[in-house]
Length: 164
Image (cartoon, rainbow, N blue to C red; front, side, top):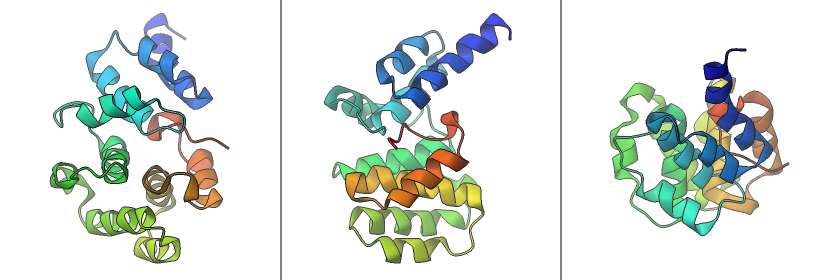
């Protein structure tokens, strides 16, 4: 593996192991990756208050993609922040965005069965990403199988760190 490729993957390896500080440190050389990593680390299990704050304060112009948009919206909702800026950028998710929003809101409210009904027949990858965001929104109360599905289906760059 080339050095550049290894250094680009290193933050995600650290994230997958739950080494959140190392994930942030090893992403510093690439501003775009560092912004994305701040969002993922802030949404991760075990994130410090400072890491959560950094994720919530990250400008909406940096580090946003389908993954970080969903987990970022879930993190914002969990901490009582306005989520409109996230959903305004959800155009790439077309018809899924309203359902994913309702899913995350129901998860935050502890209505897990209701939340799952919103997902309907969504593709497994989209479902797993929704579960990861649901875990972020609901915290420790989220169903264990959501956490497990997200960890098993999604690659490290596709989710925050979720404990077993």
